[in-house]
Image 1: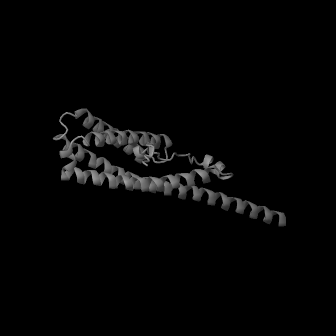
Image 2: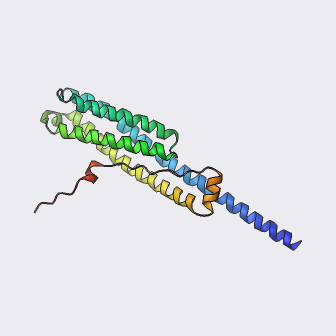
Image 3: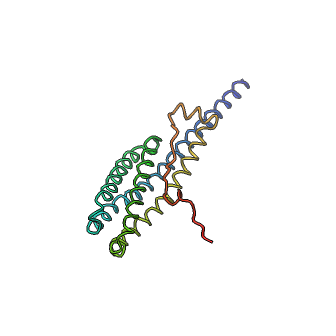
Length: 195
């Protein structure tokens, strides 16, 4: 009789522990999905601003059509990747595709900004200045949201990979996911030092 009670207690403790692991995995997955929703909002804002910037710049950049076309193609690719990733932010390949698309968009925008430097009238245009400021502000928000998302993904992946959590994660299809990595052109440039 005493052995039966001890056996039932051990089974109950094991079941409670397994339920705890499962619920913690669900909680961590929902946290990183919520963090991705914040990125999604900021990327949508960014993607909505870009056509306005291109349209406003068209009058000034009549000889730079290819630059404007590159920006819009990169933007459209990023929008497609964003929508795909938003459907399943837990799918690492979709997140990696989004990161790659956003990196291409960043490069196209950096090229646009470089070309714009050659057009003083464009830089002086109030609408262009306002749109560039809004884009810069939005990119800062994307950076903060991305950091929260990446922190959530890291916590989820660490918990998911620990034993015995990895057994429960495997049983209930809690997949590993990827962090969203975006290159900023500024981060790739060597600092300039003048003496």
